[in-house]
Amino acid sequence: MNYTIETKENFDIISPTQSEFNSQMAEEMKGLVNNALAKKRSLIINLKEVTSTTNDIGELSNFHHKLYQENLSFVLCNVAASLKNELQKEELLDQLNITPTLIEAIDIVSMEGLERELLGEDF
Image (cartoon, rainbow, N blue to C red):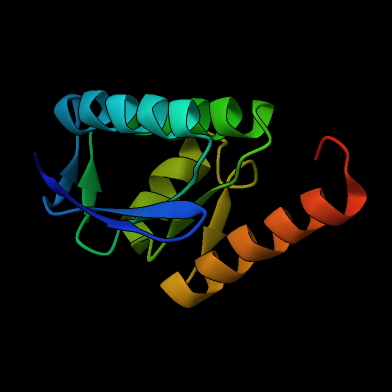
């Protein structure tokens, strides 16, 4: 596996350890997303080591939608400029939650969780 996984109270932080987001990484990540869905856990994907991509970057949008359909959060952090450019080309940059740092990603997941609890409705 080309990831490290850090488990927190209500979410997991997945940090890929390879430099290219490719079909193998997308497929492995799909399994991790399905596992998070089964366990009702939000996800943060820390992309600090990833500097390039193949055409599989669109899978991130699919993961985002799957988690939000189940009232869970999905946040990307530490996204390299080259990946942001690819996300922009795919018109995905504005659809995804992207933060510059891991701390900010944790804040988003925490705030969305609190909103869900306080509002008691679909988010």
